[in-house]
Length: 71
Image (cartoon, rainbow, N blue to C red; front, side, top):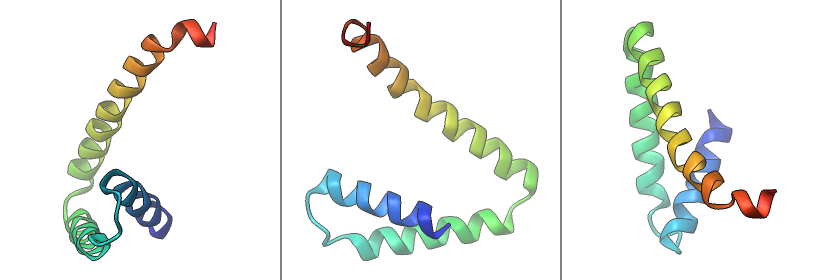
């Protein structure tokens, strides 16, 4: 979990261009982790599957756009 938090924090910092809001991200991440620990396992896995599917969409779009460079 610490590795995921660090990776997400650095991505958040890159997107905003400043590290001013890192504490906000840490608190939000901690709340989401707590909520995940207190929910049913079926709900957590369902959310995880949906989140992974949503992450695949921009990656697939970028692969289509960059297909000429890859070939």
